[in-house]
Amino acid sequence: MGDLSENFSRREFSCFCECGFQTVDIELISVLEDLRAEFKMPITINSACRCENHNRLIGGSYGSKHKQGIAADIVIKGVSAVKVYKYLNKLYTNKYGIGKYDTFTHIDVRAKKARWEG
Image 1: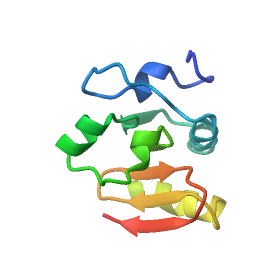
Image 2: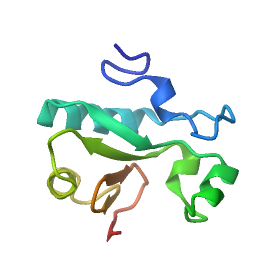
Image 3: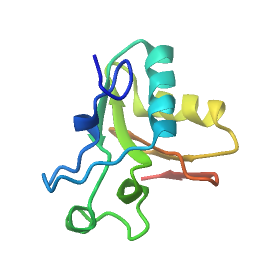
Image 4: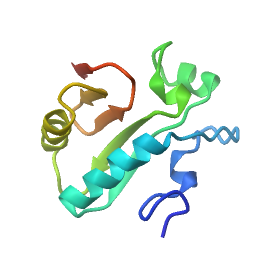
């Protein structure tokens, strides 16, 4: 299976620009494994680790948690982004950054609570 955890591999978290930048927080992996167990479906990582240049090119925010390896934009096959957002918000009521978008959900393991819709 994965080389980071049962269901996730390091390559899934690598910067898309192929610069070689790869970092991922173990707490983020734990959250994703919790999601995988809850919904019993594969999780696609749309975007995770980003180098400064790639983040800028795609219009990412200056303070993007993706640059720290503590964030992922995800899709769970057969599960709406709204349902994923609601589950994460219920499970992690007072922590993490959780963003709801039309086609994906953002999760990051920042120290303080943040919520938004994109």
